[in-house]
Image (cartoon, rainbow, N blue to C red; front, side):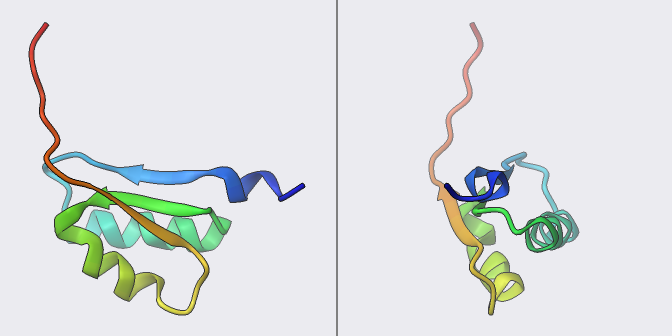
Length: 69
């Protein structure tokens, strides 16, 4: 069985996320050796740059839609 941390996706999908937020997210993912980070599609290249040389994967979302209930 894999270590528990390898089952975690470290996620930041807030529309107001900044490059500094993504840097922090990726630093935490590297520190704790998470399975992946999940970011908005506009930050995929930034995350790839920050995670180069690690085995942390990158997941992205496209076209999120919010609605009121």
